[in-house]
Image (cartoon, rainbow, N blue to C red):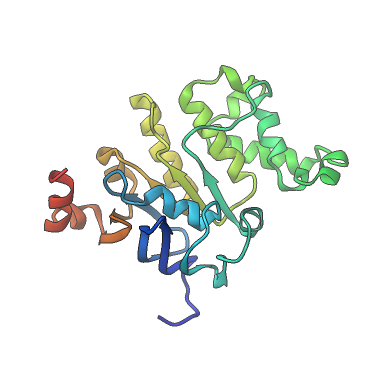
Length: 248
């Protein structure tokens, strides 16, 4: 591969070993700008570990992670966030006792440092950004609601909103619909399609019906490697994928 690419994310020959076990084994992954990519695979395939490595929570043993052609493997997690990589973990981490508005407001990048927080004023710019994000995540009517009172699904959307406040160019979500009602799942599918119109989104998901609804391209992982990649139809009819999924 050429070292310079048009991909927002180019992962090449990525490997991480834990006590001799290769959790990620010489993996290559390329994600386009404004692409909604879903990663599927059996438990233990290395899906969450891959996201941990892209965001910097887990350090690579070997290989390269380029974000907008810049090598990320050497950079700490907080620097990667500033560069535009946003990551939502499985458990929502919102401020339960603050309002929806305040949760979004404190996520505005200028409030980041201690100095920033001291001199932080809720300017018109911040208010406009909060309003825009609240509309994008479907919580514009709940801005004054205490976050702890939201439904499970709304809390998940709020956390996505908190990441969107930072205007990431790559957003990574680990099982975003776990525990959601049918209606919340539908709304989340619409939400993910909306937010991927101007940024790249990587989603790890187990629910195949949901994957069908949202995926432009599906990557199937198995034992730390990529087993198959393509449209949902491609991967569903792939004999190796059928074997891995039905063989478990």
